[in-house]
Length: 289
Image 1 (cartoon, one colour):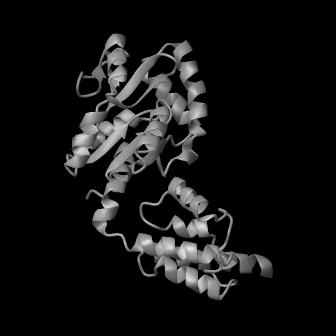
Image 2 (spheres, one colour; image 1 turned 90 degrees about the horizontal axis):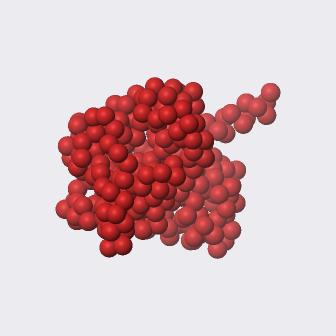
Image 3 (tube, one colour; image 1 turned 120 degrees about the vertical axis):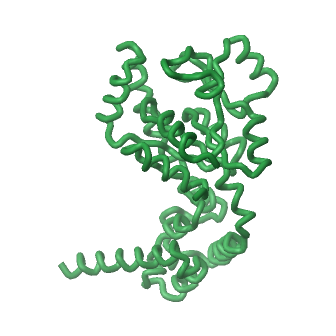
């Protein structure tokens, strides 16, 4: 019982350290120096990865990449850093702390919203378009037929297979992919670049394959994974919209299971329990009031 109480107290102490960093009351370098001075302290027993995740704009994917570049294991605690790792981490943290708001702005200007089929990506992005005029919502091109209520040029650019082939050949897409082994979707490159050059916030609502391509071509993008509250709710939403045959529904649900496994590749995860709340979370990641 005493050991259990001590463990709980230690977790709370580490949580207090992280909360102080998030609130701006302590710097990450201060935490590292305190942890190196006393490996048994809350700072010393804090995992380096957990400390990095307290930095605004640094999600799980970027944190893991930083650790890899620094040669630090994700399980390494601050107090256990080697003598070569210590200065590397402090230099990295000081370089991030020295960045101006203008320097950091591009990392939050392009947000990619992806997730499994029927999770409500379209509904959330439509809500953002209608309620947050400062957000520029990128319109994708697709070879599938319009669904009821969808408008060409607003919901999607509905194009033929031949036109899609031409756009690929001429390098007009930022990303494109074949989804559910049927229709193709792609994000026209020039409108995104133009909006970003104008200092606009851009939201891309695309599939997971596309999100991976954007990450490769535009590392500054922030990737957000939209999750359903439960698997049962995802099934209910897919069946309830009534836009696919039973065979197509089964195929999409099988794909959704694979897509859900990709969530750890993303910087942030947002649960679409209530559309307006999910939209607010996504917009918050774009630093828009």
